[in-house]
Length: 534
Image 1 (cartoon, one colour):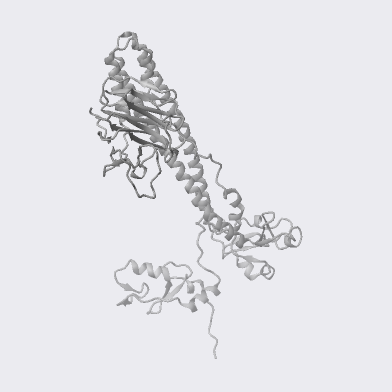
Image 2 (cartoon, helix red, strand yellow):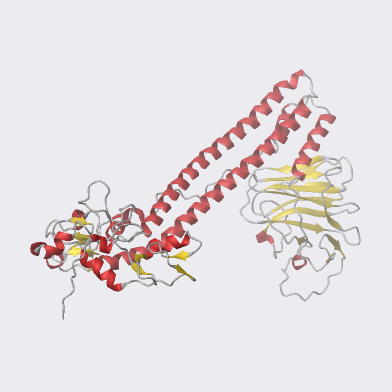
């Protein structure tokens, strides 16, 4: 049998479209060969499908399959179509000059990475064939054991270092070692927990920034209202009180500046922590996606822990509290103020506290058996006779009172109670632990902050009691509490005056508004909505 001439030139293995060595060669029905990508792209740009060489048309786009025989010939010819190394995660050829081609193998003897062209001597020369070729690796010199000149393929868990096979027989003989890939998978799993944790820290700090900004916004509004009210009152006075006006404005502005400066410093610190955490999160995410085990483990210990941050759970900017500032200024000028000025002051103060109105309802489970509540929970009536109530959840309260369903353990709140046509009552706020106890003393020391009306007049219950003068019969009482400042104030809503303010109070439990009608067969006590136009 005659032997066929198998001498091929480069033209025999070149694509007629790109004129380069075939890559994934395919054959058309007319018998011509092309790179699969070349002919596919060519037909995609044409309306009719035909052969680029002989122009033979095809009714339908032919289904192309790789020409295995031609692929083998291309391999025997010894060349493949190489791609420039443009992707950062790909290893470039160390021999190429100019445009570096993508490496296909790394030599652990030469410590050099080769593209397909420059790898040819290692496939042809007998001495070079004995070299150990591996998948492309970057920075080969860093992956070799300096002591044994062997590839660092293992990881020592005792000393947390890379080791070669000879190291496990000498310095690390009794240490637990694992393949780098196995340690990589363990650390990668830990990264899965680090990223959400860092993100959670970022969200917490963003929320803290929002809280601080909201506090500053409310403080500015409070300061604006305080200054405006002060101007309205103080401009009605003679020149002798102009200094008081200046002092008031200065005091409020200084306190506001202090709050803003504190908030600004905290926000800057939070934003810096967010920036640091965001950078760490990006580094962690980037490292978690690398497939380079050596690079991953080399940087893991530097990135596994978030950067040091402050514990922000207890950090807060206390809201600016200007309530009472104007009252102190007016007390200093009491001899020069007339009743009209006092009325303006009290009216402004009442309007301010009324902005903290809360909607509360009375809780039937805390009502004494001699009390009857309305269906909407807004009224309580003393009926005198003790009723039998079968309610296992009822708090056993001996005093004839009822608490609200709602409690307050921070901030400010205000509510009003209609007391018209009633002759005896207690009302105010009490701490949570008072519920269910038999107590006959209503003082702050016990846990009550209340005013009491009886035949002898109006009294703030304290030790000793504080008798409060009344100018007219009370119709409606307003109660304002600033939990954080330790302030409880009572107002004659119709008279637009402050009845009494308890300052320096210490609150450590939730506070409940409560009502205590003392006389039966009279008008009920009513939780009344606030009407700020009064």
